Amino acid sequence: MSKTPVTWLELIKMKLNEEKKNGNSPSIGDVVPAAKKEWVEIKNGTHSKYIQGKAKTFARKGKKNSKKSMTKKNTKGAASASAISGEDIDIHAILAKAKVCKKCRKSIEKVMNKKEMKGGNCGCGMTGGCTTCAI
Image (tube, rainbow, N blue to C red; front, side, top):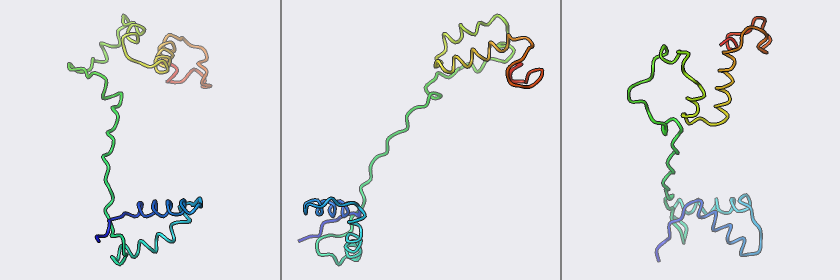
């Protein structure tokens, strides 16, 4: 009769199932001391029923695509800063065409509205405004 290969986790599961059959509700901590003694015999090759088996490997799930990789890449290259800084560009038209979530859209619109503010208190507490609020 050949010995069946078993891993440490399989041995623990078998011990838990044995205790459940006896009517107990065991935890892993209850089973580990007895399983440890048996595992030493299995590793030495002196156990009557089992030999040490190899752990089963499972394929890992692939990573989900990030938003960055899903967006289309510009083949002609990025537009220069001077072309973007023109006053005739309507930010709302750009945001309507761009795939931007509502939260990001609000923060972009907030920054663009700060650009139109002139003087006064920006709310940051610095006298004369700060560089981020002046933008």
